[in-house]
Image (cartoon, rainbow, N blue to C red; front, side):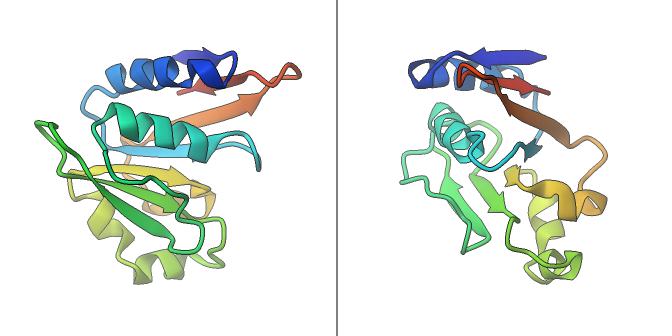
Length: 139
C-alpha cells in the first residue's frame, strides 16, 4: 500500500489511513533518511491510535512507552529509535524481544540493526521525500 502526504496539513489523514490498514499487525519498522519524517509521522499515528501523552523522539532513551486509551487490543505503544545503537546486543540487553512479542504496538525507527530480531510478520514501512517535500509511505 502507498500513502502520499502532500504537506504537513495532510499528516493526520495519512495517519488515519495507515491506522485503518494496520489489520491487527503490531510491529512496524520505519525506514527513511534523516529528516524524512519518521518521528513526525509516528506522532500523528500515535494520536490516531488514542495516545494522549506527549509523544517525543526516543533518540536518547531508545524506547518510549505511551498509554493507549480506548484500544480493544493494545494497552501500550512502544516507540523505538535505534539510530544510536552500535550493535544488536544493545537491543537484546534492553529486552527488545519482550517488547516485540508483547502483543502491543511497536513502532521502530532505524530498524536496520535489529532486523534479525523482528518477527516474520513485521511490516516494513518506507518513507521517501519527493523534490516538492511531499512524503510517500510504502508498506
